[in-house]
Image 1 (cartoon, helix red, strand yellow):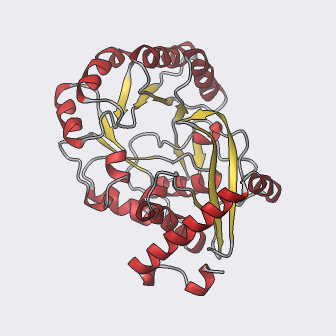
Image 2 (cartoon, rainbow, N blue to C red; image 1 turned 30 degrees about the vertical axis):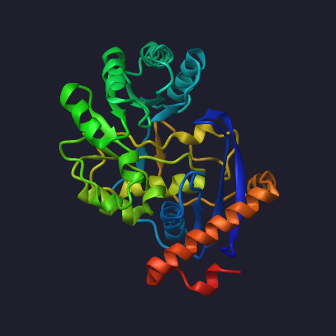
Length: 335
């Protein structure tokens, strides 16, 4: 296991894709803190990319920034429409967000009610805002056609990963006027640097934590062939800080980044947490608050703590075997 690592569990304000809390580990290195928090369904090779991002943050330096802050979108989980409207209004009024991503993929009636509630919140506050739809690849091609005929009337900036299969995504793009973004088709690829989206999608969703960090994300962005939107992975403020730095390092950042997820946590590891102010988040390194980290660590069960330690060790061994020269010294990493 990594010697300077701490497991954590953070409660969420509302369930998010079946989760009521977010678990992971923080890693401390000479440069600061990194976050290792691959979701449970990630295999070891993909978890190892997450560890690369954590080691880059804790052992390396933030990339050179082209901007001091980045605009971000708010996110609305798959909640009932009244709750969606309330969350959207809070994001607009309290956090200054003008772009709101809505989780989609329940029933079409529920999806439409959620989108209508968000559109009403944007219009009633005079926000002149944009809506993104995030389907997580849950639609078939026929479902996508039917759903987007209904949802397209509400001013959609883009729909994210409407279908899992990229051939279906390309077919859909040829038939509709709504721009399409790809997420899972990149971060779940065996080698994200080989993905090319020209003629398939309009935007690439690049999540630094799942791609191996800022440097790896930069390589993907340079090769992928379409404009990039940087997004998070339900990270604590430690991980979000790395994602914000990555977004700020890109020469071109045409749209708001998907980094407004800090508002989904009941509490964070950092005080104050990285949540949007005036619709954006500034670039800065952050460190965990000692008391908050202790509390979050105490909420991890013994069995889950051991599970995270095993996963961290497995991911590190994978990285060491793949590219030993890129890893920190072995004696610093195991104890």
